[in-house]
Image 1: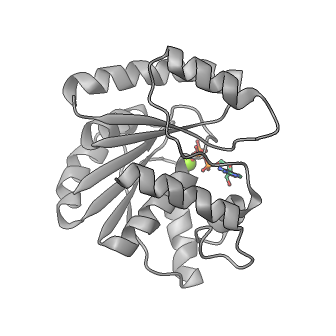
Image 2: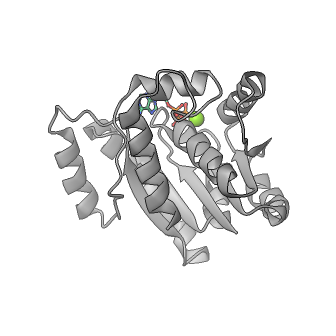
Image 3: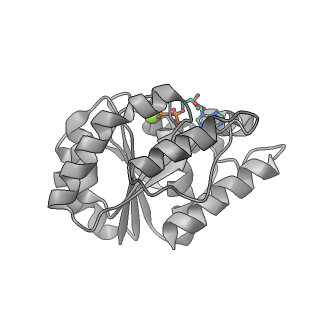
Length: 210
Ligand SMILES: Nc1ncnc2c1ncn2[C@@H]1O[C@H](COP(=O)(O)OP(=O)(O)OP(=O)(O)O)[C@@H](O)[C@H]1O
Ligand SMILES: [Mg+2]
């Protein structure tokens, strides 16, 4: 059983988008649990829309906050092949708990100076988590990439200076991601499929699960 935590203290970077896609792709391979660790409950809302939309398969979704992400999460995860935690930035205890529970952490980031500046707190939490969870595999995912700008190259340079592992897979800013979430779906499942979005998310899945 592998636990994936999708984390960032910054909002709007794509934690929920990435978490629900990962969880759904894992649900195709076995029993998958999606833990919504954000008090705002966005992943849980997606799951509710998904039930209305009759998409399948679905990850089993539950909301856990603060230390319960670790305590309850550990017990609950026993019956599953894979677990994904959407660790909301609003819940600091939840973020720390997710990093204790997980074997792999994905940090979605945008490619701007603001995104870099906002990562300082997160990096402190990640370092601390590694003291208690030394095998934690932490990787940064560039999300909402705009290929027309130089921002990505600058962000990559900055991430290299921080000694952070960056995933080869990248996800661009694409309307399909927004549409999919609003329908309780994934980019693979919506009508008028955006093949570029599908390829990006599948490359991410392959890289993070191997
Ligand atoms: N690759 C993408 N392309 C286009 N839109 C995206 C992409 N990733 C995320 N978004 C959009 O950006 C917004 C924020 O994404 P999301 O809710 O996944 O981020 P989050 O980190 O979970 O935010 P929060 O901190 O509010 O929980 C949403 O409207 C989502 O649809
Ligand atoms: Mg979210």
